[in-house]
Image (tube, rainbow, N blue to C red; front, side, top):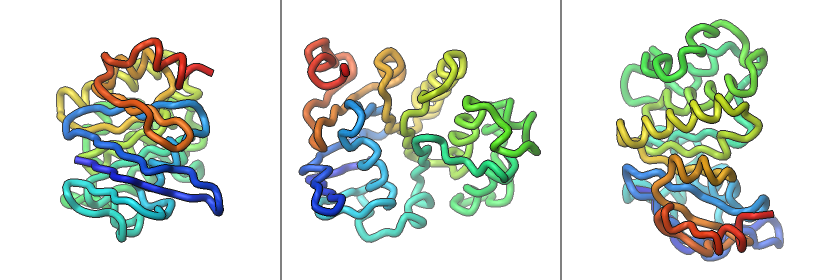
Length: 231
């Protein structure tokens, strides 16, 4: 579904992504892993068109994304939940959710009811400002906003960061439900190993902007964890 080949990206003179390859298989959950600062968020921002790439290729359902501006990528069916949530604090929950509606191909004027089935708290707080929600509720809002577009691929950048344990469990259950029951493809950046093992089918480890290991999540062994994931 999503294929990245020989991707290179720079910040000024700093080479941040090196000849990076990644394949996200349709219907699977792929976990992108690695220590802080190895290029995980940079890669997601390249996929979404928020950062330019120097060379390489990114294709989604065989369509090249290289020349598409960021605003054209969501309508293809790519939902994105950025690190830190980035909801609009002064807008209501309803207004935050409605922001994604123009990217839908059908029924662009109504928030899908399944969003409230997944996140009942959002329906209860529909008219509250996003900034008044707790961190866990804001994360649910950010995921709901990405799902509003009815994506084929959902990209989540550390959705459990700074979230209370009960909400972390809920988010894990929702990812499993979306991925395994509905068939939504997921690309997940995650630092928590138990969470990754719970929800992911495949993994890819980055180190210093390069992919250094990938495979099925069951192949994530202690040697890889010690070498690339522990601080």
